[in-house]
Length: 190
Image 1 (cartoon, helix red, strand yellow):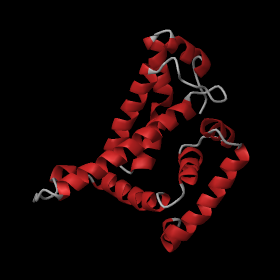
Image 2 (cartoon, rainbow, N blue to C red; image 1 turned 90 degrees about the horizontal axis):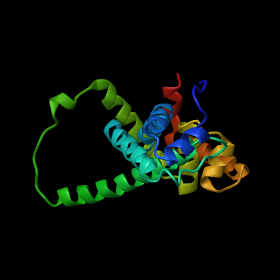
Image 3 (cartoon, rainbow, N blue to C red; image 1 turned 120 degrees about the horizontal axis):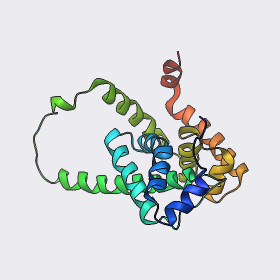
Image 4 (cartoon, one colour; image 1 turned 135 degrees about the vertical axis):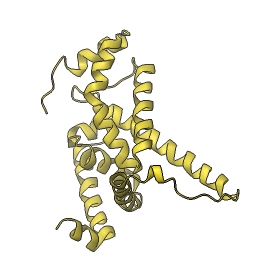
């Protein structure tokens, strides 16, 4: 996809000076990638929406601290989104533990039964269970490089490691995921 408008470097500088229009342009440019990244990490469209909003709120609040990687703010935004998803997981675990102590009986809301979204979330949940079994370094490499299309060099800069290390993590993650997901992956590819 061809980038139109000023480069991220100019936008980030303008945003640091408080330019809301430049921030809107930065949001328009990267919000879809952040949203997709958050969905891939969380397996939930609604969590992805919340994480995207929180990520750009942090970007505005910390506008003087946004780091560019190879001229783009996207890797920094994706790392912020990943941190928000981890926070959401911890909060969800605490909520589930609390709800587990309270006897509640309720059925699913028919309004939430949107087939496509549920299928996506079910499939992503299965993949996430496998990805969560990977070491953290491999999960981060998968999330940035495979899911969000960040280049190896940009991912390496965002994670503070070498490009070779990122490539190695992605390779090991692919092998482990193939073993974890096994025959179902082959069936899905037909």
